[in-house]
Image 1: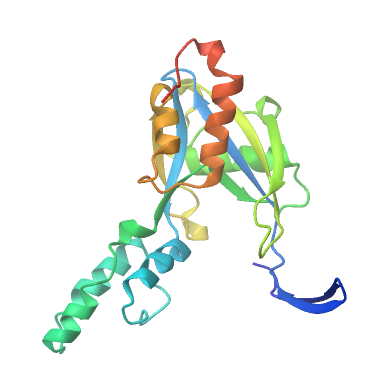
Image 2 (image 1 turned 135 degrees about the vertical axis):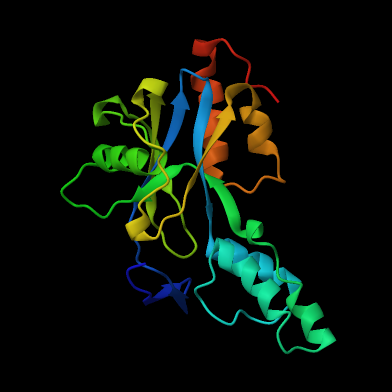
Length: 228
């Protein structure tokens, strides 16, 4: 986030105000491994998602802002055993598990390097997060769209990249120096549409849209059904 200003405007003669955030635009990449016929996604803990799930439990607010995927569940277990009454222990045990804040996403990153093209930024993200070294020239632009119209108005540009096992040069996992803790996940092609529409699997809209795009544009090439 860059800043959080307020916008004042008139709509049909009525003065209104709106809080918004100026943020970086971003890129995302649908990665398809042609060796194993699977999609490469990332899985990570999102504090905002976790807090939305926590809100549903109507428990006390968190004691600190630095509870991570591991820390959120550990804190709930540890704090409930130290100097609390039975009712307090019952309340703290209602913390959602850390998995409640984990989502499946496309490999993605912020457009925060003005000296690099969108393709070059996307290439770096694929290498850092998923471990595949793909030339920027091999990235196919799918489309761009507003990724947050209510608060940010930021634009995301989506790319498609075909990789093989030969392109895999590391385990990925993101940049620890930037605080990233990312798990690389493989979704078989024949399970993709079931995965996309399964509401029990927490995922971003980018995953759903990109799987549908692949189904409509690329699946005939591989002669494998992606139907639900």
